[in-house]
Length: 413
Image (cartoon, rainbow, N blue to C red):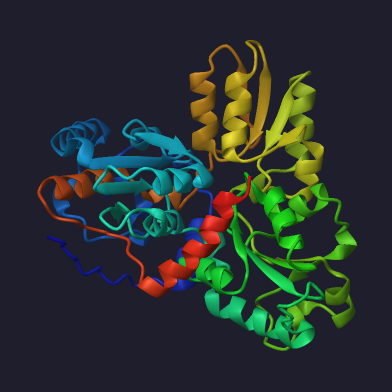
C-alpha cells in the first residue's frame, strides 16, 4: 500500500526558499532539537504528524531504532557525508553522491532504500535501483540550491542557442557541444544529457568525464556548478581564456552574456551556478590557518572558488577528503574546506590528528539539514506499518534517458 499525503501549501516564494538554502544561520546547532523548535521548519515539508514535532534527539533515536528493528533487512538507509550525526548513526552506508549512486545500482536485496540526502540523489537512486525497490526521501523539501540554479527550461534555451551557433554535427567532432551535468542536478537534466550524447559527472570523476567528453566533441556545456567545471578545466590544461561563463539570467538571444568570438574560442562553457556552502571558503581563511598552525595541510572541495583551490594543498571530493584524513598518520594536521557536519565527524573520528574547518562560522548545508530525525522516524514508522510515504519515482521516459547518462558516469574510471 502506498500512502500519498497531500503537501500543505507553503505561503513562501521560490526566492524565499532559495534565500533560506543559501543563508548561513550562524546559531544553528549541529545537535538535534525538536522539530517544532527548528525555525527553518517554515520552509520544510509540514504534513508530518504532530506526534513527531516535539520529540527530542533521544526519543527520536529510540523510535528510529525500533522501526529499523521491525523492518530488518527489508530496508536500507543511505546517508550522505553532510548529514548530521543523529542521521548518520542509522546509515547502513555513508558516502558522497557518487558512491551512494553506485551503491543503489549494485545492491538489489533491500525492498526499501531510504535516502538521507537531497532530492536529486534520491532521484538517481530510483533511476539506478531495481524495479522492485522503492526509494524514500524522508523530507521532500530537501533539495539543493545549486541544482535549483539550473532550471531545465533555462538549460534547454541555452542548448538551443548553442545549436543555432554551432549546429549539431553528430557525424564529426567539429564544433559539437557535449552536455555534462554535475550529479547535483534534476533528473530531467540528466535525461537531457542522455538524449544528447552527454554524461553525468561527480566531483570524484570530473577529470575522467572531461576526457570522455572531449573524445566525442570539441566543447563542453558544464552545469550547474561553474567552480567545479573551472577547477577541473584547469587541471586538464584548459586556460581561463578557453572557458566562458553562461549567465542564465539573461534573456534568450544574449548568448549567456558572451560574444560569438568568446564562445568559438571556449572549450568549456560554464553555467553560472555555485554551492552556497563552498563559496564561503576564502584565501584569507587559508592564510590564517597557515599562520596559526605551521605545517598544516589545507584540503578543500573542488566546488570552492578557483583561488581557494589553488591556494590549498589538496582538493577533492568528500570521499577523497575523508580517505585522506582517515589514512593520514597520527599527528597530522588538516584545515578543511567543506561542510561542517563532515568536518566535525572527521575530527571526532580521528582524535590523534588535528582537524578543523577553515570557516570559523558553523554553517551546515541548509538543504541537507532538512533531513531532521523526526522525518526519518516518521518515514520508517510508516514503512514498518506497511505504508510508503515520500516515494521518489520518475516517469519511464525520464528514468530511461537519465539512466543512459548515469551509466556512462558509472562506467568512467
